[in-house]
Length: 466
Ligand SMILES: Cc1cc2nc3c(=O)[nH]c(=O)nc-3n(C[C@H](O)[C@H](O)[C@H](O)COP(=O)(O)OP(=O)(O)OC[C@H]3O[C@@H](n4cnc5c(N)ncnc54)[C@H](O)[C@@H]3O)c2cc1C
Image (cartoon, rainbow, N blue to C red; front, side):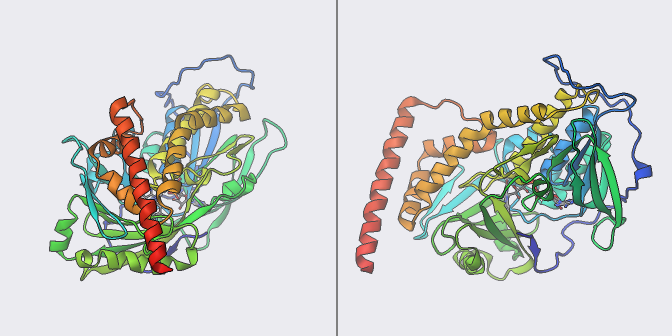
């Protein structure tokens, strides 16, 4: 399940002059950075920590790790973030919902494009335009992950977090409730990681596993496996006139040719487009599906130069176990990507923050030891808040991504203005507000009608095949 980069990536962004090097002697002394006080509710019985504050390691510096480390550092926790590659360029479409920009206070200059139009293209190439219902200030943000991740990590550092360039290897699990976890990692000196590292160890009181789909932290706590998709993406520099077409437009392609259980996409970036697809059930055919996606978009990307080819696993469900003792998983390590949309950036950042908040709260701003129960609180809150979202998207995928006929029905349904408004509202704001009951009923009737038509179409297609 490893990420692969098949072709080198040209300078899409000038490299930072900042030197992110770390040795244990450079760990920042604890300052009084307690400007992130959470409300402490119940009295605690866990031991007080004397002469120091709670020490927490975050493994992985993607959106989950960056936001966890920032929250911990702001909350008075002695924070260590271990990232193996400081200029990591995570294979990703980079689409983020509008609410993430506000909730995570992201500066607008790290957003490459503001997408206000989408084209959903059915197996028979019927294109439905989406976006007409958006308000003037609403958009889907398109980011490059190397930019977003670095920004979030730097903010953790500015708030007092210690950023370590190193590859986490394993940890020794303590036998009692107070002894430290001993982390082993290869410490790197360069900005980019890699090469031969120095064997290092770090003692901490708790660990957040934000190390993505191939999480070593998950292995250390026997968190179990999950079903995953493989997603493949080519970044292409296309001629200016073609780039103008994708100025603020993203395309989604549906059909057995582009994927038996996912969708193909063309997403606009700063000076190129990202063309990709994914699959759960036929991973061995991913290159065939990618070629089909490229062929479907052929006229619009013709003449493009491929500047990077990348692939990575995408979790399809939460891991069987997401915490153990004083270790918890967040983001892809936990398995928080939604079905149907394949969205994981916002959920990674949000779960990182929620887990860190539970630690800050449970440790009374770093003054007490945390317990398993504190981490359980994060999971309970998470499941209560997001379980319905995951379930709805799971059902949508099961119903509509089954065959070309049901995908045609899906596209037909998305032409409806009310469906678009409801879909965008829940995507952009991650909140499902009560809708108009009459319109909701009409929507259900129209969905059932679409599915009937899809079934009839499938029967007709089957009979012509036979
Ligand atoms: C091709 C593709 C397209 C996608 N498109 C979208 C999209 O458009 N929108 C969306 O919302 N989601 C998308 N996703 C999903 C999204 O990329 C993930 O859900 C998201 O990156 C999860 O963030 P994370 O911080 O949990 O993990 P990651 O982003 O995977 O970050 C993990 C970090 O941990 C580091 N790390 C790993 N192991 C170690 C170790 N042993 N030691 C130290 N560091 C380590 C890695 O270098 C990395 O920086 C896409 C995924 C793929 C594969």
